[in-house]
Amino acid sequence: MNSTVNDVMTTNVVAIPESAGFKDIVVAMRQRRVSAFPVLDAAGRVTGVVSEADLLAKEVGLEPFAGPGGLLRATGRRAERAKAAGVTAADLMSTPPVTISPNASVADAARLMYERGVKRLPVVDEAGRLAGIISRVDVLSVFTRPDSEIRTEIRQRVSGAGELGVAVASGIVTLTGQARSHAAAQRAIDAAYRVEGVVDVRDRIRYPADRLPETA
Image (cartoon, rainbow, N blue to C red; front, side, top):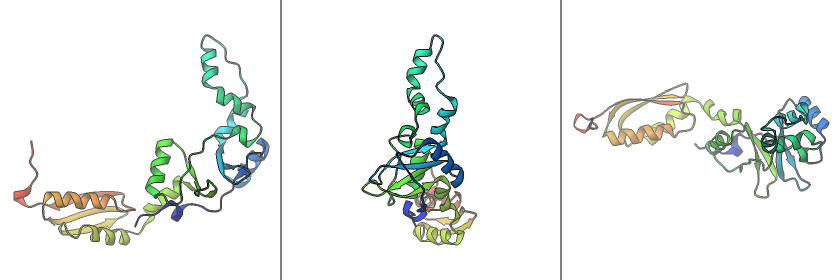
């Protein structure tokens, strides 16, 4: 089982047009109890994301940059100053948006969120139109998979490694029994780690005495 973004994403997504005003965005965030919105152009394509962080520059205001390093700081924070002066979603949004395809794997979504430091990803079709949104909690939903399903899949994957036992409790897998070889056991452990919903794998496998790995 390898879940895709389409399997776990939220399809009931509230998006805002590029023309949405600052106050309207704040009101919508409070009413919907969300911290960010995808921003759409006239054709329904995702052009950016506006979040609470993007709006905070307005509260800070256009403070001056004084002191010896003032010019450098002003140059480095030009985008923030522009947002402080912005009044529409097009002015305020972070762009280009970090998006993902509905056909991508949940693992790919998790990796992208981690690497880019974002909490959610707009899901877009081939034309760039909004299809849904996937959040960190959606990605983590794969860890709610029943232990019985995890055990069944692992048993199928490690069947050729030897007389191995598979136990799963709260997503933690324990492999026991006699392996055909150290290499076969390692392949079984790697296979178990790749099963969706696995939290950790504990190696309790016995190895043939004449095939133990060499030690320094």
